[in-house]
Amino acid sequence: MIQKMIDEIAVALNQGLYLVALSAALTLPDVCGKAEYPEERVSTRYKKWYSTFVPDGNLPADSVYALRCSLLHEGNTNAKEKNDIKFQLMTNAYTQSIEIDFCITSKVVHADGTSETRITVYVGYLCTAICNAASDYYNRNKEKFDFLNYSIEDMAQKLGAIGYGI
Image (tube, rainbow, N blue to C red; front, side, top):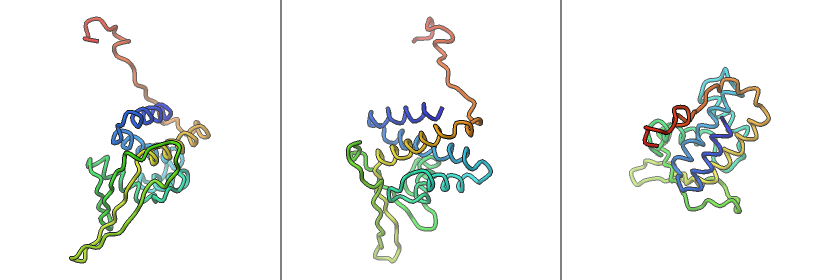
């Protein structure tokens, strides 16, 4: 199932469906983290797995986890943790022939004294790095994924396409 997710993320990136690709890619450290650290809390295993297995692209695990939580739970790329973090997603930088960091981070201090962290994330690079790490990890540790026991079946094929508008 991990490879199917990765393949679908690649299709989404190639079709310009960056939010779909990013949302799916951000779940991979959850799944792989459960395999590697099954007894840890979700946030701990997510950050641990990401820090250990995804190459450093200048985007720390805490920031990735904050983006994951904001995007998946709120449909939003602004994370409020200890400090405000605003993520700017860049979609036009994706090309497999260039290697750059996943993001650029800057700290902005406003006239009223408040501050925020702005992180520009290159979606294609981040998705690809997470997918590559998840694929490598899965291929080396398939026995740890026995908790993944579901499938997606084609209903039209099971019932026959006649009468179902397909």
